[in-house]
Length: 178
Image 1 (cartoon, rainbow, N blue to C red):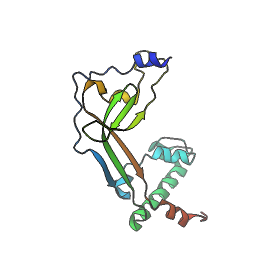
Image 2 (tube, rainbow, N blue to C red):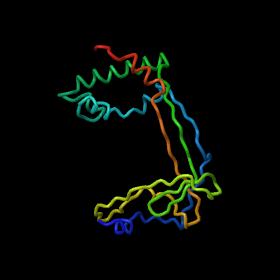
Image 3 (cartoon, rainbow, N blue to C red):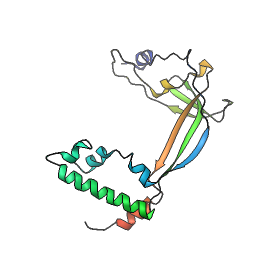
Image 4 (cartoon, helix red, strand yellow):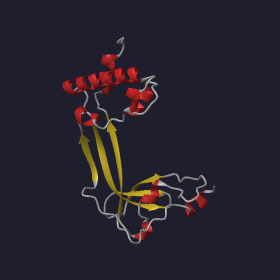
């Protein structure tokens, strides 16, 4: 469908009766974690898919066809996670930013500070343009208050790494035969 028709079928949200709550902190903050904490949040299903083992975790471990190999791979992964944790050879970290922002059509203007006078970046977003019956044609910008509403809203962003030590660790294992 045309972009205009898709925009006309965008998310109908009641911005008149909703005021976005302000965040406790605006700006960029560093975050760090350790392997033991992160282990509890690993989505193992894509891990198995990477190794061409089809099935959802944890059911894959009991699968008649690939269960035995999946269990062996799972156990090996935990041995490596244990080693990385004990050696502290990988230190996951990231940054989280929360910025004053408002929507203009399908774009989000990101402001330097709470005065909202200086736009430092415009984040452009795509709107779904397939025909929807009974559903909105969503765009990420739909979830930010319109600039014309006069309501202060915010945009969050993050970037993470498994650890800045990844390259050195990869070189350490390069050429090993299993």
